[in-house]
Image 1 (tube, rainbow, N blue to C red):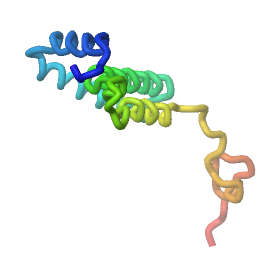
Image 2 (cartoon, rainbow, N blue to C red; image 1 turned 60 degrees about the vertical axis):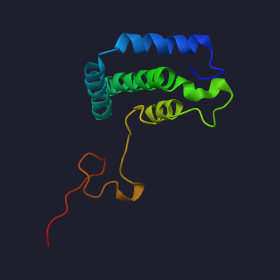
Image 3 (cartoon, one colour; image 1 turned 30 degrees about the horizontal axis):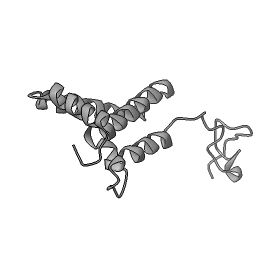
Length: 125
């Protein structure tokens, strides 16, 4: 426990260390599987992508609280909060929104794009 760290935060770290004592291989394999799911999750359909991004936020928060002790920010000696908030922000940047209505620029509409209004075939010369 760092000097100035709140007792509740030290307690969380101690209990998690006791829970994982002697389980390093299992914990690292489970974490690797969860992180692989997050990496692939952004390519899944929208509902599944949102679920994996929520998993990413939970993993980032758990790592930030348990592994980094909030970056030591509550000790008064920290220079930065650590990577947890940044990872949560990156997960938010990948949050799937409504599908784009039209991916082609305005000047390309109607020129050989079969899924666009005004599509026409161009005969070969």
